[in-house]
Image 1 (cartoon, rainbow, N blue to C red):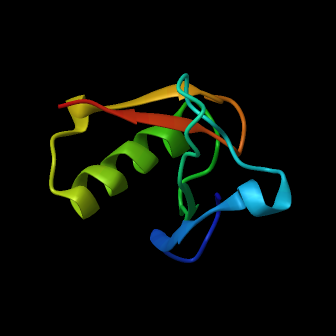
Image 2: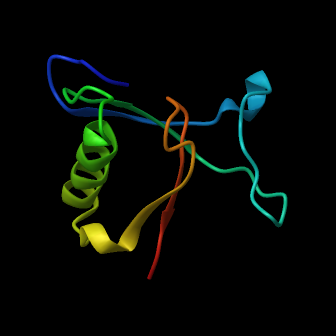
Image 3: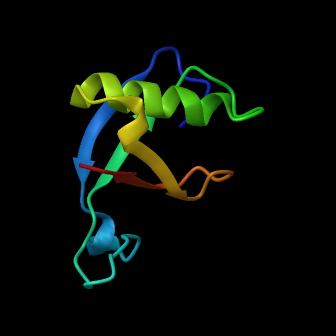
Length: 82
């Protein structure tokens, strides 16, 4: 997820087939995005870059995107508010 040659979203996948996916409160499977970032995971730089990249790709404000779980891990759960 970090130290890539460029910021890139590879696509949506469903990891539940491998037993690695996440489910929400209603037991619905959540999509999994594979993302590469240039920023290093120091002092929250990679998290900020992740939010910036998602904001640009989804054409929404950064304030609508929140890291709900995994702030210090490679795997994160992201929430996008209306």
